[in-house]
Length: 461
Image (cartoon, rainbow, N blue to C red; front, side):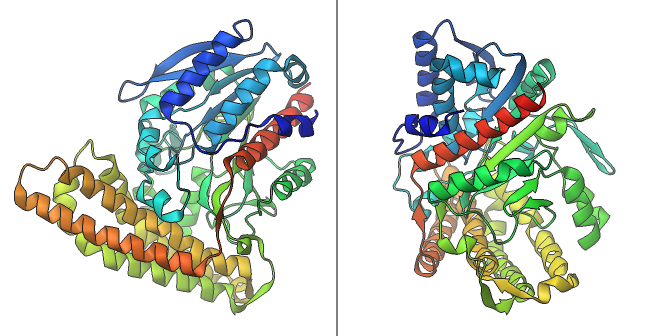
């Protein structure tokens, strides 16, 4: 496969497409390539928006690709925007890969619209955070597949998840690409199983695009590492056992009020589908991949990070509890997500602290990347809780009929707005970050996805 040629075809994307723009592009592609591209409506979202699937090619194996299982992660939609056109116009590429491709650019259009405030820039951390939205776990496509493990029993998939379940069951894909990304950090990958032959290609691709790998702390403490920045796909089982060990089994059961992910569901009866994820950041600082030794232990860095998270919780909780009766509405998805985050925050912090304190390896000097992850990147992600508080109050203040209630909501919103601005000012002063051009992000996700798909196609003959 000529990856240099494919790289050269990636358009100079400058921003992210909205739901309407993605759908318009899908219909345009079908009109341009009517003999190659078939578009079907595979279902409707909770709010009635159509969800479209493109069928491209006629290979011997099925591949399923879908974007925005997390709606604050539109890089994947742009990657699929590129790949659908590339596959449609390149018969040799389709023949070499030997898949029939089923591609859903956006599986959660309702929630994606709630992020569109930052899609056109400016690409700065405050603007991103101010317009941020990520649903509660039980409202996420990514984590509402049925699961039954020990005391975790979930069988309430949302309509968008049911669409993917139906596609997975009917297609039994040999290859599945669930497209994700993160707000700040470096590149990393998740795979169903260890395939070392692929990793040098992944590393070279991000290096060519000037994107560092994430070499500090893993996304979660219980991640299984195959290679630097390459991990086994996360499972409910891993999370459950981690929480049971470091908190209690009661906590593990009570705080997993959601399901599992698509790869787990596809292989519930034995491995038949290889699932691939390539996480990429919008923003990075070179320290995310700095493996030189710092001046503190890894344990100290984790404990200090936990202490900050507790202070953050203590700062927001009185305001949150004051407005909770006013924002707790079924259609206020910002409030639903906020409630989940506030309910689970201190428990997860306690688990992380105990994990570091009980592991003797954490007495060693932390790398610069590990310190940066713990003390700065974690603050970036903690700020998303403040963002949800702002948006939950903003939504209710805009429709409150009672003047006293509106005043309370506006005061809480103003407090959270200032808190977020102060946090962003701190991050700006302690980070040397830059936003990664969308074109480079798409190039990496497209190439890594195609390399993984090619490997699996050859392996399955």
